[in-house]
Amino acid sequence: MTNLIGYAIAALHQGFEIFPVQPNEKTPHKLYPDKPYTIRWSEETTRSLDQVIKIWSWSPAANIGVACKPSGLLVVDCDVAKASGQLKDTAYAELHEKLGPLVDGHDVLREVCSRHDGDWDELNDTYRVCTRNYGLHLYFRWPPGVQASQASLVKGVLDIRCNGGERGGYVLGAGSIVGSGTYIAENAAPIREAPRWLVELCREQPRPPKPVFAQPRRTGGISGLVDTVATAPDGNLSNALFWAARAACSDGIPIEEAIDELGAAYVTAHGRGGHRQAEASVRSAYRNQQRKEGL
Image (cartoon, rainbow, N blue to C red; front, side, top):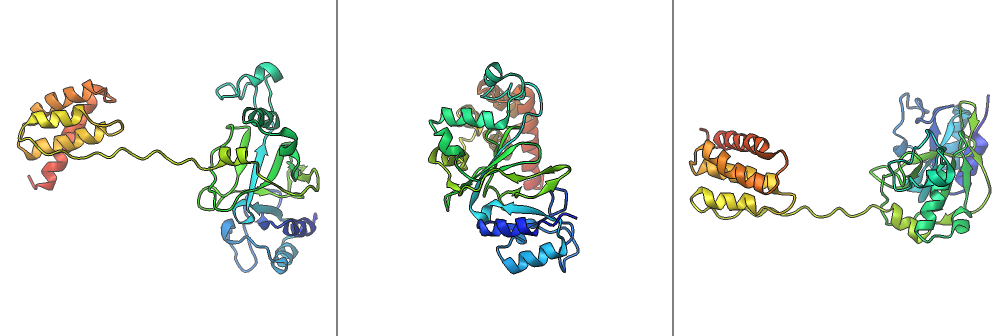
């Protein structure tokens, strides 16, 4: 039986926080010393040599999970091409004209680097691990305090593992075995700081603030409510319609009048779904308001 304890200890010496992965698989270990259940890997990472010796003595063939978030890592996962024309619907579709129907993630990364004025030789001058299917993991140090995105750089061929989300991501470390393939360290280079352009590309982008819908004063009739819908800010047209319909119900305006007048304003403002959606929203708003008022 393969004993991977030496690889686990080597991962510790590189400063990685690790955890055991099910032998011959990519999923966290189904058992654990003193814990007969599938572990929550993010709660079981360790840098303790004593703990690593205990775990891998108990399960010598366990693969090595490298937890990127506590290890301060960004790992760029360059996958092999899985299908012909895989880049067709991406910003890198033109690579098929240059490189053919099958384009590997490492070739896509070269183009990404070029488009962002990066240094290709510098980017590759870092610790690298060849995956079991001849893909490639490039390891970088991630700057503290910067939140990474969970999104792929290029879907299907170029992924990242970092500190995104609640737990971050993980990769299998060198020495791990899945099927007939082994994860092999391509070099013993130190792990380079992630280039600034790569950090900017991989960091979580701030979400645009949602428009604030301010409820205007009622005018005592339908006209002011129609104006509310017709002048609703982008992204809040549906909210404006629903609020105006509730106000119309509260003011005693007949529902059919509200459907006609507010629906027309909604359609004029290019509301999604047109008059049919507007009618459904008005009727829903009336039911909501009637329940609130006990009618």
